Image: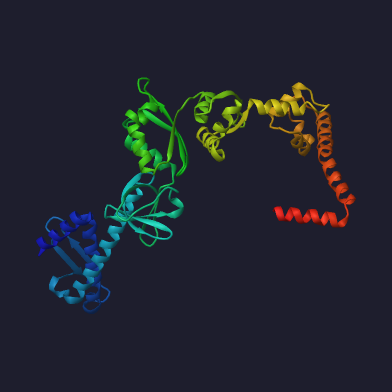
Amino acid sequence: MNKEFLTVLEQLERERGLDKNLLIEAVKQALIVAAKKIAKITAPGAEVKVDIDPVKGDIKVWVGENEVVSREFGRIAAQTARQVIIQKIREAEKDNVYNEFKGKEGDIIGGIVYRLEKKAVILDLLGKAEGIVPHSFLSPMDRFRLGERVKAFVYEVKKDKGTQIILSRKHEGLVKKLFELEVPEIFEGIVEVKSIAREAGERTKIAVFSKDEKVDAVGACVGIRGSRVKNIIEELRGEKIDIVRYNSDIKEFIKAAIAPAVVSRIELDRDNKRAKVLVAGDQLSIAIGKKGQNVRLASRLVGWEIDVRSKEAIEEEVKAMLKLKSVGKKISAVLVEAGYGSIMALARTSPAKLSELKGIGKKKATQIIEEAKHTSSQKEEPKIVQNEQSLEKKPEGEAKAEDGEVNENL
């Protein structure tokens, strides 16, 4: 019987991945519970002790000073032991799953699409557990089929009525870990991923740096004929990836991050981590990108606020400022560099804020703002007066007729 007992324990340890010592402890607790039930009848108030030899499997139970022979446990003892053991095994399995996957937080894991729900996609994780990918954690490009193999980022593992494994296909960490899998130089630490900026389903910018002068960081990530990065793009369902060479010189880093646009000049405000990037007129739309995506991702990648402007636009802004009598060439350039691109913008600011700029005192600031307000109001008023006068001059019937024409056109 003892051999059979040890065989069962070893089988559970092997098949379920459970700790043998943990199982022995569970059996011990079960026997204590069973022995206490007997002790209530045979020796009320007596101390109950159980000893199990982990090598031979011998079990000894004492109620007070008397050893209880195993057959005295009977049906109640066996049933109690069985229930407690089953419960302990389940708890141990849950703890094993939790501990295993808790250690994988921040990593990626492969799974098979097991179930498609309204609010989430459920993945079977190697038959050990289920992973949940909430819809808010999916990439817009993700379209799954049952039985499909996918990779996901282990976002969080928590105990909530069992082990809950939250996965993400949207997290920037997914891209980083995919590069570690595909690029041996990153996995080995020769090439380092410095930063990542991602808009899932559309575009990712990743900055890489080589610690070995003989290894080209960008080339290593791209692979021969783009083989390495292609595998990552396929896993991300066609998401575009820009691999940027990191540079400790912030100006060079910004130039690389804003690519494919060609940068003409960069002005830095290191205290506030702001950069003004000047490009030619034909490069402005490229630098900004569709719906501002390129400059937005570049800003996040670099960790600086980037303001992109064209030479032509700045020249026009300077000319517009020079129309104010209180503004000369030097002050005009200062105003434009500070972000005041129009007379209307000047009219809306305060003297205190404007006087913070180099070469502009409070008195000068007030003068500039007053003139800007006057100029702005002059541009708007004639149109309003003209419209009012034209309506006053027209007979009522004629005005109604025109109104009818407008509505018809709309």
